[in-house]
Length: 144
Image (cartoon, rainbow, N blue to C red):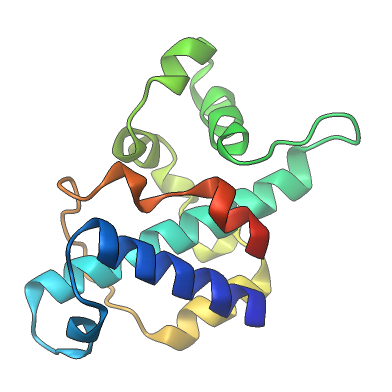
């Protein structure tokens, strides 16, 4: 569980830094921007955990779907598009394509339990203006 906690904390810090939002402001209630930031943190955490489970199921002994490769492979399995087109997608477009997989059902049970325990906002918030750098799979991979 501590790895999920560490992963969550590093994502929280990164999202706040990338979007010029002080982490102490996350404590405020009824703050739309804070809710957006929590939503993005939950979104990136969910993406990482879903991809960790996808790697476990779809990587082979001879080819690891590390970092972005897991996301690209998942999108390829869904769309059958050319890899160069998939690699050119923005993070938000990639999330749109795999949106039906961004659920606790597709992540390790321990990660889903950890996420539920946080009681993050469940309303949907627009994060189109958030930084692409919010997702740093190489940095996050240390925790998974």
